[in-house]
Image: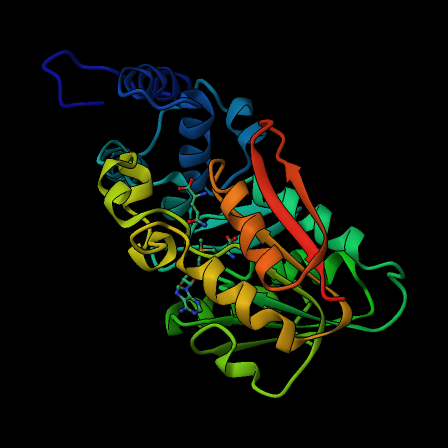
Amino acid sequence: MVQSAVAQTWTTLAVLDWTTQRFTEAGIAGARLEAQLLLAHVLQCTRTQLYTGFDKPLAEGELAGYRALIKRRLGGEPVAYLLGEHEFWGLPLHVDSNVLVPRPDTETLIEVARAAIADRAAPCRVLDLCTGSGAIALGLAKELPAATVVATDVSPEAVAIAAKNAERNKLADRITVRQGDLFAPVAGETFDLIASNPPYIATAVLATLSAEVRREPVLALDGGADGLVFYDRICAEAPGFLVPGGALVVEHGFDQADTVRERFERAGFTGITLVHDLGKNPRVTWGRRP
Ligand code: SAM
Ligand code: GLN
């Protein structure tokens, strides 16, 4: 791929092999998959279609476009930002550097929150605080067909992206996205379910994160000096925005379960339960307003 003195024909297969090796050397875990995703993006085809033309040489323009993406990926940009797209809970979401790339861990939160609503066919009101790309709001709207969802984020860019994702997935008739600080956009309203994956990284830890995570917005990651400021605020304020029996469900860091539980207890929640993610890490805590 680099300019070489030796003439080489860059077929699809040759390009994928070269990139896989280069990505592997760079410590990228899913090297071949990422190479396929980026090439399919440039060639505007599916990953499977790549292999039907595996011995076809790439056009100069295609190679140039691909080289530019490889360079950015090796520079640490997450593949989801380069594709402009990421799938969460079976929903295609637009993502860019203004929002966190939704994590598989957050699917655990969707499962827990969905189960907290006893009758999925009954109308209910759901609030997703710190919505980012809208991943949780959209996942819950999909799972709870009679729910109306309000999603809030302090970032105007995130609000625009979440609204666009709701439109794109034909869920905009049941999802409202509002800009503002935590509960400020829903003053005076109550909900059956409040869900949130707030920023939860301690400020001092931010600089130690991988190159990919450091490309994500600090606003999406920075949970203050102890990483817990959002749980302090969300747990203290949530009872005022929940109907009696309503549920609060939050995602947190693998080492924050005990302190988050303590905040739930202090705020008077009952039935406080910790749920582990697929990687067996303590990840989601939830409880009900009495
Ligand atoms: N919920 C999304 C997900 O799970 O993929 C995004 C979560 S990201 C960890 C946290 C989000 O909180 C970011 O989109 C950020 O803009 C937003 N945020 C940060 N401070 C906030 C505040 N004071 N009020 C509302 N949202 C805030
Ligand atoms: N899960 C993200 C990470 O691993 C953190 C997201 C958050 O702060 N809520 O960095």
